[in-house]
Image 1 (cartoon, one colour):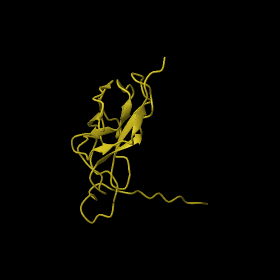
Image 2 (tube, rainbow, N blue to C red; image 1 turned 45 degrees about the vertical axis):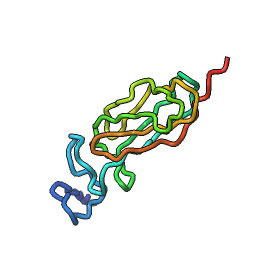
Image 3 (tube, rainbow, N blue to C red; image 1 turned 30 degrees about the vertical axis):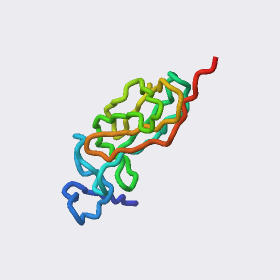
Image 4 (cartoon, rainbow, N blue to C red; image 1 turned 135 degrees about the vertical axis):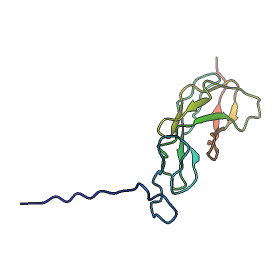
Length: 142
């Protein structure tokens, strides 16, 4: 007859300095805690893509991660994106502030109103900001 051995990992109360549990979230879903590994950083999980002037881009995803790149599933804060590099004075259209769900903010309807090459900057309270890769917005051709 075979016996099964059940091992339970208890992490409650093991979130102090020297606990050895690096990268394990140690707070509830309030959105204010950080991973034991490090402070929260924003990261573009899906970069902005090329779209013509006024056209909606494919969804841009911004995640809250620790220094090891682990997604912080407890993060539910508001993330705002703005145009970073913007020599043309263009405007960013669509919903530019989104509340994260399980650590990820999805910007589903962003657009830029002038041709040029741009970056996006993501910001959130309690997190280090991030800048996207450059992306081009070509003019609409008739």
